[in-house]
Length: 159
Ligand SMILES: NC(=O)c1ccc[n+]([C@@H]2O[C@H](COP(=O)([O-])OP(=O)(O)OC[C@H]3O[C@@H](n4cnc5c(N)ncnc54)[C@H](OP(=O)(O)O)[C@@H]3O)[C@@H](O)[C@H]2O)c1
Image 1 (cartoon, rainbow, N blue to C red):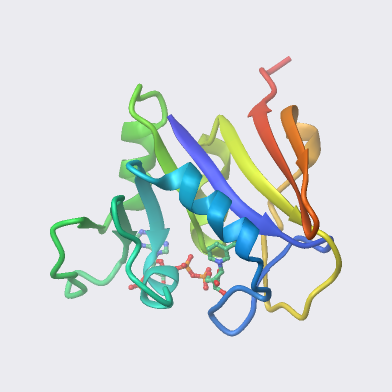
Image 2 (cartoon, rainbow, N blue to C red; image 1 turned 90 degrees about the vertical axis):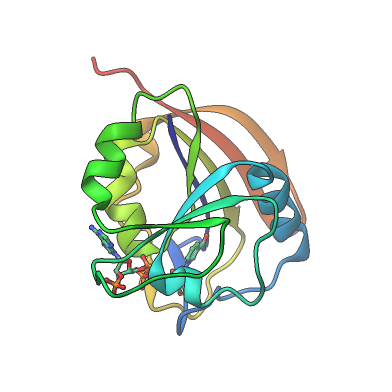
C-alpha cells in the first residue's frame, strides 16, 4: 500500500528554496514516529536537501538520471517511478511517499491513505501540493496541535 505523508499550509504550500517553509518541532517528531522502521519514498531533490540522515528507515530515492547513485545500504535508487508505484499500490507492505512536489503529483492517484499536517497560516512558498483535493478522502483521525492540525485520511471508494 502507498501512503502519503506531507505537511502543507493553508494555500497547499509545501516547500521554499528546496526546504520546508517552516520549522515545527512537533511536526517533525510526528513525521519521525510515522516513518520509523518503514519504507519511505522521495525524489532526489528532497533526499539531497535533507538536513541530516534519516536513520532506521529504508529510503527509496527516485532519479531519472541513471548515473545518480547513493552509497548507503539503507537507500535504494529508483529509476522508474511509475513501475514502482504500479508494483506496490496493492502490496501488503507499506511504502510512505514523502515528497517532494513532483513525487506527490505522480503518486497521488496510487495512494490509499494520507497522513497530513495542515499547517496553520500562510507561508512564503514556491512548491505546492496542488493535486490534493479533500473531497477525495474520508477523515479517519484528527488531532489539533498548536501550529497544525494532523489528519489521517482514507481514500473514498469509487462511487
Ligand atoms: N511539506 C512537506 O511535507 C514536504 C515533503 C517533502 C518535500 N517537500 C519540499 O518539496 C520541495 C522539493 O520538491 P520537488 O518537486 O522540487 O522535488 P522532488 O519531488 O523531491 O524530486 C524531484 C526529482 O525526483 C526525480 N524524479 C521525478 N520524477 C521521477 C520519475 N518519474 N522517475 C524517476 N525519478 C523521478 C528527478 O530526479 P533527477 O533530477 O535526479 O532525475 C527529479 O528531479 C522542497 O522544497 C522540499 O522541501 C515538502
